[in-house]
Length: 112
Length: 118
Length: 165
Image (cartoon, rainbow over all chains, first blue to last red; front, side):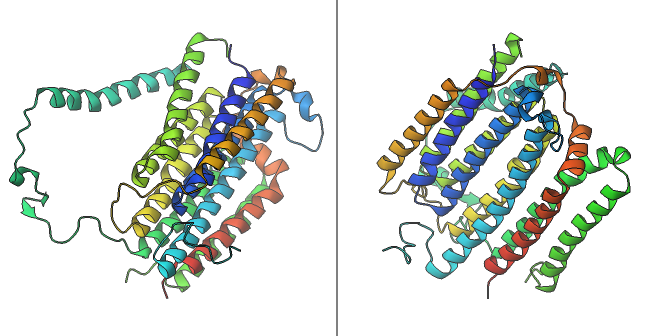
């Protein structure tokens, strides 16, 4: 009944929703929120691969068992996502302090 | 094993119902006769002073930031602690390096007075 | 994976996740968006449980629904001058963004339908926290230490950028 494709399709839909939000929002914090949605979509696919893929898919001695590779990757993605959120929101706060706005359409110093 | 989570699902349904059903009943049964006094904003029985949406200080963000970093550290500490019996001395040294590097970050935050509540 | 109850759980969780994700990108008030984002994070944890990744489900709640949500809510409270209902409106390229997102989804769905994955035997293994810890410290020592450097850099960088004065 439930197969790998169910989870991959779910991840694809979630990724597309996050991408739409990241491209179409005006508030910089909202853009970071949508990027977090995209991270979660990728994490779902990684864990689904770890759950469903056969061991032969990564038949190499130097790699961990395939059922754990996806989960370890997910832990690292979560780590990077937390660091990204911390620095990204600090940048948003710095922009707000100097410009009194966080609308990405007003922060266009480098636009040409 | 997965069925054990069925209890959590049941608990979740009951918890959501516990919150929503009284709201629905209240919404259906109550009488609405608003007047200016009833609609006025108040706090502990007195009128509010100034706007209710206040600007927070950046100090809150710095605390949350340090919390997030050490929360992520926990994610690595936990599987390390569970698998410790099978890992040996090498893993202990690895974790010491890991914790030491993050302690440097905490020392930096301390030194820069980011944790001081002004 | 053949239990109908698990299939029902999957579709209920998928509905909750996708509706809350749509609410995040559609709602006009950014505080509402943030609260729906928390709901999306929690339902992703539900998917991890369906996929036998209990530890990751706990991590998802701990890091995303806990820590990252706190960061986001503090950032909203620090940057929003009033609780305006129009704090999360779309910009001028919303139509173009919808086209791009739809195109990305079509490409992903097309690739999914064309690829045949080597699924099967691994499905019986149950990776628990101990197996995960062993894989992390036997095969991924260097990424693990680099992660600590990344967290250190992120902490120092964010403190320097966010501090006043």
